[in-house]
Length: 176
Image (cartoon, rainbow, N blue to C red; front, side, top):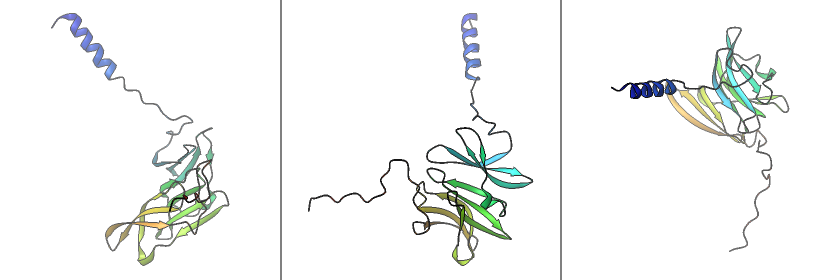
């Protein structure tokens, strides 16, 4: 193989191995973290990190990297499967109370924690909160089987909408 071609191929191989990986600022990856959840607005990040040997939800404001406490969750550990609403007002997670796993939604605006009762001894495994916080999808175990359930939260929580989105019902068209 001619020397110039060999040098070109070697150069391309080295450039291809230079995969850049950008880390989020503020030392987000400083400790062992898992189960990331980003708010719809991109302003908040919730992760599960090891704190004192227990998996704990950590909430971070991405604009300045500050960690924001969620005291409502502190007594119910370990945590798993965090999920955030659009503006980060609501934080849903799976907690443990005694031997029982429990899905909860925390309203960070008024400080309330809303446990979500599941009928028939079902245990939550994973969850996903809708961006407007009006529904939640739950993966549960039910007598040894996996199921997905969708719960309506509209009677429990106010909508968490993106800025500028109308809260009123759209006008009906004048056509018959």
